[in-house]
Length: 350
Image 1: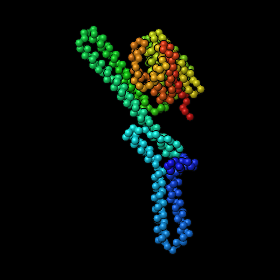
Image 2 (image 1 turned 30 degrees about the vertical axis):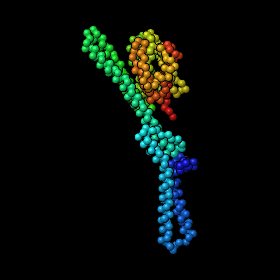
Image 3 (image 1 turned 60 degrees about the vertical axis):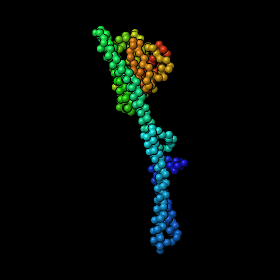
Image 4 (image 1 turned 180 degrees about the vertical axis):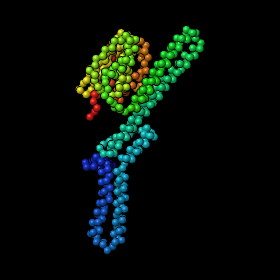
């Protein structure tokens, strides 16, 4: 057991590394001096000043060397932190500390460990992004080139149809790139950053206005049932985008002539629950477990053939998490509709 851990068992020293350090330094320097004074007093060497100087110098030097050695042992946890940071930089090895205690060293270890795991998480996400871009953009570019080759040998009527198809194809790829850029943007924000009190009614009004043309195109009925204007903690931009994403998903997978319901109510006085339900194709239990994953998924088409990036709900969950909220999904099974539930705080945490 190291000196640091031994000192950590002393209750008076548990919460302060500085106090541990100063205690060792004080005892290491002053105890030998006190012992030396007592020894000299008993030896009665008043008439031998050079002997006294030699003894004092020797004892002080030896006690200082011993104290410095002990203090070096006390700094072992700091060297371990530096070593583990270097291990991560050079070999991507994460620390396996068993952190205990409440002093500055324990806090330093917790902060460093959190930072390293966060860096590793970001690194993995960057690799996932590279994989997604490689997989989802390389093939479409080749498809677009082939389509352009076909245009050269097509007649006027065929050319118009092929141009329309190519335009739709490129529009879908642009949507995919937009989603990826939004994911990168919002993943780098700190949770709870720039939160304010925002109006739920205002968010719903802006979100429904953005999807109105999609609702009309599929003749979908939208029912909204909210409490009188409620304020929640969030970012109006992120919250509106999250609701737009969920509504777009519900529209995409609902049959023509179906319905979508938005309901909101306060629970426990300090949280607001917003649910968005649809009469769409529903989801299997397996699908429910993976819809929020940031992995390459099979891109399902909507009930009218609408394209999908497969990442919209992951982005939505990220948006809600950045506002200190939660997002869950429920479905009774295939062809039984789905319900997405957003839970947001109404007050700042104490």
